[in-house]
Image (tube, rainbow, N blue to C red; front, side, top):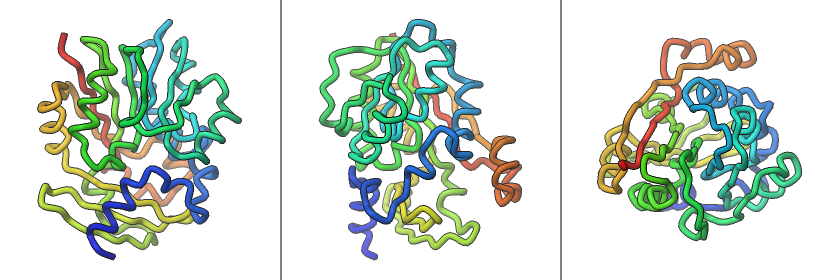
Length: 241
């Protein structure tokens, strides 16, 4: 497959709407991979008492369960996939979902806390995304972003079929065939996120390697081979005051 095609598929807002992607099996709150994300966000997010939280690329709305448990007053999601929006409205009706892309969302509100879980991988231009996110954050507001670890997500693993294409900035577009379908992502080195955020006026305050969580190791034993390695990273950005 050509590099242009891989990039196009990775940044296609409707890729979760393709008939062969069964994301409703993997993307709900009881999925081991989703609970793996919740495990780490619960450790590093602050108490959200009374806050409105922005969830960018909110998918099926699964993250709202954790955010409400941490005290959020409201959860506002941005999600371009029609299928995911339908699932979110069915299972997590408390989430106010904007059925559009970050670039097209029209949200006047500003937030102390925003989250984005495995959605920066679908951005063609992360500096543009960071600029848009900065506008949605209050001064001193923070973005908690979970991204794919570069080494893990660009390497051959399990019995997955993987397509790859490297670009000049060091990022790699990948297409990975999993049991629930083929998904496409752009996996970036940490420096790409840091540099793009700096140019957009955000500062990377912490980066935390995320190894397979205890629940993921129990429920999906194949991850035991990676128990000492990061499979994701949590990046905490701040809009300066």
